[in-house]
Image (cartoon, rainbow, N blue to C red; front, side):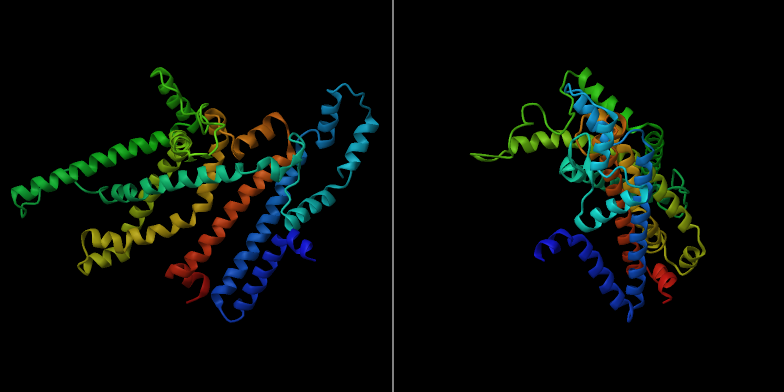
Length: 393
């Protein structure tokens, strides 16, 4: 019994969560909403699993043919009967619905993502920590983009309709000069940020990575490709003398490149998004009403347009993660990373490993749907507009 519970831990977590939300939803409209969102997320994951599994079926060949082809390279004589026997052993002779149901059942009950034909081991073992490495890259790239885009996007919206100089005759000469200097710097920064954002949207990430690597080559320096240099790649983190700070410094000297590259286009897009959201909110009637009540300057912007522009940005975190991950595979190949994105390119373009590719794509969808679920329930709890629309109060 203990072994059964240990193997089916994921199923029990889902059942207990659904049961708890159902009980709480009887007395709380908020938890009723959370339960509905939870069920919708599960249905979404089930739909994604069907789509991913169907797309992998479209690819030519199957795991049995690849395994038999590998054996033939070892000098064995292979017949069609051998291929059919191997396909039956792997269950590939079953109907599509049966194989998909078995894959979903193994995933739900045991967290089993299937068997990798190219690696000849379970997908869970083939992935190892690679997916968490890709997850870290994406999260770090998103954090970089938000840290840059949110404040500078707000600044860009704030100075949009501001003049380059202070010509108010009621101000003293010194104050006009000081205000003109501040406005000029802010407007110049806004122009620079617009140019950078347009370049970020137009320049592909992999081309940016190639240019940075070429700069290192022209300078005669070692390019920061991969995660470690050759000197530290096989060294342990802990040696007899303790923690190896040299390996940490080498890691930090390499890790900035993928984070910067994948955060480049995300920052450019978020700059445009934040600026558009804040400008749109600043032109609404409730902001004019606040001005009529005497609210001015930064207090007006912080309390009204900026505050109300954050919710849509927060609600799009899941989609931003998906967009960043979409850029990661090619960047990983260019930089020489060994994360899940590079493994996905290998599975789709070189080894045609359907099970491995399906597992990675499903994990990405799981992260995106989970992030959307979390942002939905958090916004429903903290944003009065969302709470009123979904809860009715």
